[in-house]
Image 1 (tube, one colour):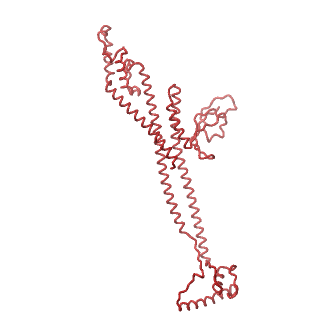
Image 2: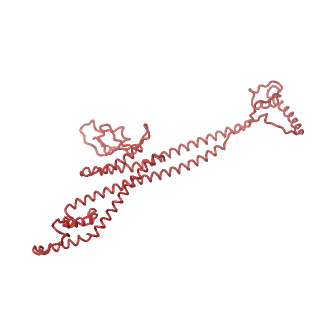
Image 3: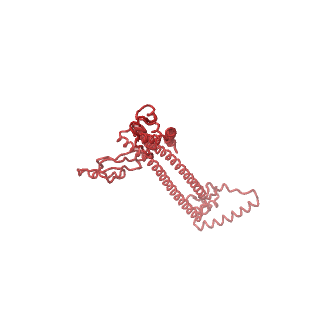
Length: 406
């Protein structure tokens, strides 16, 4: 794993950790605040509604003589009433936002005016927290997946290197064999009896070789002999019989040994060819495994970008603030581009033929009266992503989606 990859993984971990930390902090703060207000106003709603029902059944004169408890439930917007309404709303805000709590028939008097806007604002904040939690979790999980994949790859590479080392050691034990005899290397012990025996053996050997040379048509040993143009066996024999000093080594290779070496060489060549094929196959498997890990990681990040863009579009249609989501989306897109993954969009008003590898057409068609535009790209529904290896090589991570004219 190179330094650049480690830096980007650290950035993703930092982004994911910061997002998860912020979400956890907000959740804890909300839970503590809700528990605090529930302890103060948890039972106020039922008590106030019962008191209001009893008071509402009284006559007008009795209502005037029996005013409600000040600050708990009053038609006047005094400071104590507003404070109690805000506290009751915060105590029951989570239940109202999730739809679990029942809304009183006089909710405006219990929670104060504008309580619906506060509930909607709370819902939006919860959705933002959920989106950030998902994006942060994906970043952290993606880093863990990459680290795990790198560990698996390193293990496979170590096993392959061990296998290759064993093969190389077996091949190194195979070697070609040559037997070279040099006359200068032959030394006799300084034993007189042994020297006599050796001299007698020489005489017998000279006589036998002399007869063999005559049978094969080679000139006598006491004549000038041209060793360079003689076959290997007669050449060795002539050098032994000649009185001239020996100045070059003699290679004694018999025909059976030569055939054995030839067969051994062929076997070694076959083993080397098989090892090269296996090494090439392992390399192809490694490249395919690396591309699978990269593609899965990129698709997870791209899915987060799509979700953020969809949420941004919804908030834009509702006229709400969405700048914070754009910042998160831009960070993810920048991380992809820095890793070699780029966005692309097919050309519009161009024929779809020739762009099938880069885009896929959806079933829905764009109505058009111009027959010349039929089958051409009307607009891009979803952009695509490609992984650029170099100037001449790239791989498609995800195809774009386009809508064609009818």
